[in-house]
Length: 471
Image 1: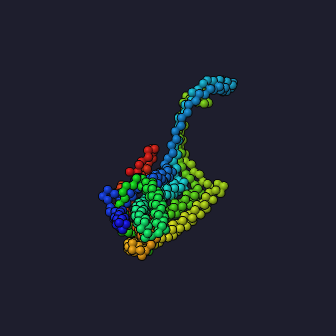
Image 2: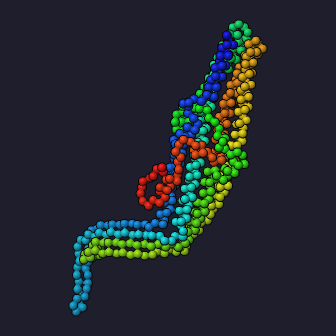
């Protein structure tokens, strides 16, 4: 009877393990579906898209330096005048006249200022803004990689923790069966009270492990919800994405040093810093502009007899800087030092992505080997457990030997589950390290966000406060 109970427990464990890892459900959530949800719902990614749209506005702000500035003015006042005037009368005699009264004065004017030359400052600012917009797009691409990798990790973590939780629950079933066996054998004096106590102790430890696994499972569900933006359902097993990864380590390093988002961002930052030097140098050049103005005044602030006046003018204004306290030279030196820093940042970014590619490649290779080792370990542990159980039944093994064999099997299966998770996550990590992890490369079933759409919607906008949605 104890032997039949034990075999039923083992059969249940094996069946459930197979159901968890090898039987995808038609209604189950898939990893690609979860990544698509994260691509659309993740707040970090949506916030970065908004940041890129805000960065787009720096280009029309820079282009405004080419455009005229128009100001309109109007005033209305009530003026009291009391004037005494002297003039020459007949024979050269002085004649005095008085003017007094209240005058309502209205004045309307317009001023137009059109810059012509400013040391190419506007052109440099425009090109700099375009470089920073491109850098913001690469930062968005880096954020997309980070979010997709976090989503894939959260998905696989939940699969792993679900499976481990199930394994620990099944372990309790098996340990309960072994405890009943031990009690039955103790009653017939085949084993001692110590063997029963060992079985009870191992059952308590199994329950503790199950509680820890349940806590990890609950945490993994919460992380899944935070990262992907939806409650998890029944998750389908996922496959690695080795087909999208580079074929060789050297090829992956070369690609990452050239095309990784963080490297390209650093390149654009170097270009922006170069243009900042030119912007600072433009303060040494003369500026030229045309100013036109017109003012229509009804009434006068100086005479009650003047009914209306019109003043209009157009002028050219040339300004040649000679010395401005030395701040302009300091700004130029500062911009050059910043340019040197950005160039160093570029080399640092290249070295960092290379190190990440090498590390990710090694982790992927290790994960592949680990699965093979874990599978062999599980198969051997199953054989050991069955053999030790049979030997214990005939008195050649102790209860502790059986408990140890059972724990080794559980540990081997947990290691296999963890290895399967590491295998998938490592493939996505390598993809991100080389800069290939994106919704487009993964062919996710979602509309791909194109930051260039919003850029072209606002770039040449002269007026308006409506914010386009970039769609």
